[in-house]
Image (tube, rainbow, N blue to C red; front, side, top):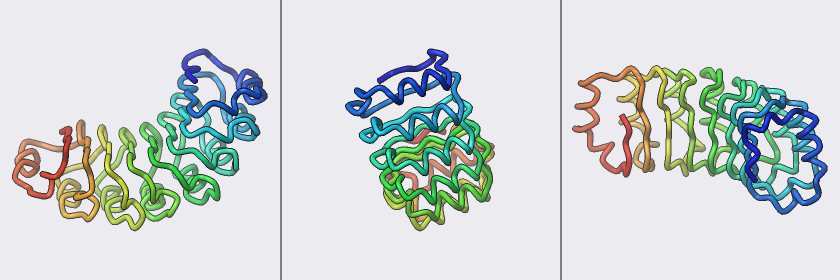
Length: 219
């Protein structure tokens, strides 16, 4: 169900949460509307959204409060895809996701364009809630070499196949850390565009055998 860019308010989202036929919806996109954590709280508390597998909240100001309410909702237990791009989430919101008793089945997570620091990356790397992730998008954070180190030392991201880290602050040092990590061989797609990488880093990528298993590399 696509409800993007309709200027939906908290009141509108609350009305949506009361719509019984929502129980047949598997995918819901609410990108670029006008609700905040209050509207999201009503939605995720609804008994009619228990079958949702995909939820797109991009470009809504839900913040950490909204992520907390989502994380605490048993109605979100079947969720596999979650888009939180540009929603005002910080590492506090990542903590809520990492400790959720319900969000155990996430396979695709988009956190791009949010204010996440190293603590948030450590939570991503260590929480069992992210063990089923196949796609992780964390562009425009900005993410530096230290955050790369935290992420690639993950004990839980063993299923990850696609990593998008474009528009960050990764340098040649971070690239070297990634090249020698245990996470790289399992990746099929890697997006490194718009980082602090130069021509010598491109040569390093071309010469390193560790990057040759990738099906798609964006630099």
